Image (tube, rainbow, N blue to C red):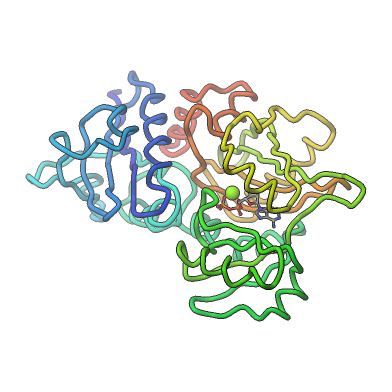
Length: 350
Ligand SMILES: Nc1ncnc2c1ncn2[C@@H]1O[C@H](COP(=O)(O)OP(=O)(O)O)[C@@H](O)[C@H]1O
Ligand SMILES: [Mg+2]
């Protein structure tokens, strides 16, 4: 059998364009060249599509636009099953691997096009992708599965927060986030009612809808909250990576520190104690409740009393060598090359 053509989508119109370039370069470099032929498809910030024939370095440096680019589209026509280039040339695709974060890549829209085209899809399908992107809807389904979620107030486009409602439902400090975004862009903490509007306006730079959440915090006597993550790969009997953790205290200073440092070193791994089995079980339950398939990273909070609170599912988590998903899988014994291979095998049913 010949090599399979794997379309790798990178870039995109979301605020996480840059992150996608790093993730996609890592996926491309870790694709088994003996089994697969990569068909990179670059999407600019403006939403132009190109078949890209150049190096990974130029993707990483955001210098991929140029001579190696040919305008291309993915045909929804099932007989095509692939790309149509501007000159009329066809590139048949055996599986599509979106490595894009946020809107237009991780939110089910691209997944819908790929499914419509009848092309095997790497990762979560249209519905699960869309549900996981919407923090409010994801919370509702996970709560219905019997798992704790932060109390929250959701604002639709233009809606002004009612301070009394927010104070009663979430209290202060509260986390204010765009309803559908990622990489912590637009996330801030409102320490008191006077900061709420400023936080809502910041979040609205990324999405017109906003979610205001109760801050998950440690106990008064010094018990700390950990943010824990769990990498999952597969369908009916998925592989679960080792659990990692980030220590937070639910207040503004820890939060800013975490995101100004932005290092992987604060992610301790693996987290091996009696709570890790419970975290893995809960992560799997969340993965299933949201209808995930292929792969995803489930993020939760672990409270000092041992309770687990759901945060979010990233259906296309960061994929660089230093990203949490590959590190958690590596700790479970799977190299990034093996992970990429297993994800593609899942999609094509090998
Ligand atoms: N309800 C909360 N309580 C405590 N910390 C939170 C809460 N929500 C978010 N955070 C902190 O903010 C970070 C970003 O929020 P998250 O919902 O993961 O947004 P994103 O989709 O941008 O990753 C989290 O990783 C966590 O550190
Ligand atoms: Mg997050």
